[in-house]
Image 1 (cartoon, rainbow, N blue to C red):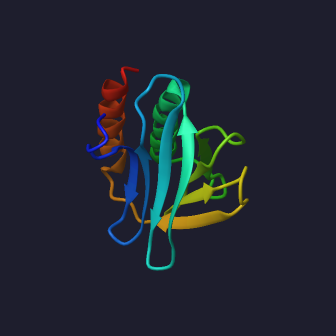
Image 2 (image 1 turned 90 degrees about the vertical axis):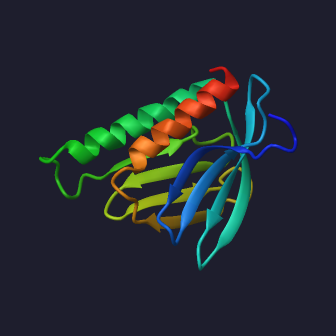
Image 3 (image 1 turned 180 degrees about the horizontal axis):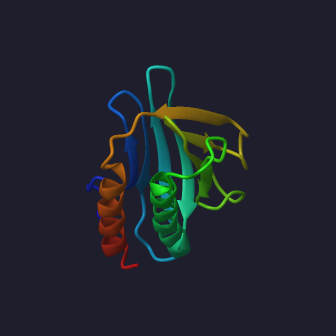
Length: 143
C-alpha cells in the first residue's frame, strides 16, 4: 500500500447513521497498524490499534460465530453472543455483541480505559459484505 492510497478497510459496520470502521494503515508483515474510527451524531473518535495475521483469521471466526448465532432459532433470549477483536489486552479492541440491535463497544483499555458503545441497525447482508472486505485484506496483506 502506498502512502497516497486509501487505507484498506478490514471492518465496516455502518447503519447509515452510525459506524465503526477498522482501517489498516500498514501492510508490512508482522503486526499491522490500524485505526478504529467511530462516527455518530454523539461521538466521532479515532483510536490506534494493531493486529497480526492470527487476528485476521479470528475476525473470520467471529463472523462465523455471529452467523451461527443468528441462525440459531432455539437460543434463549438472554443468551446473547459477544466476542472481542483483536484479542483484549494489548491494544484497543472491539467487543461485538450480536443483539437487536447489534452493538459494538470500542475499548481503549490499555491507554485511556475509555469505552464507547455504538448500537448499529445493520442490514441483513452485512456479514457477506464483511467477508468480501476480509478476503480483500487477506489478499492485500498476503495472509
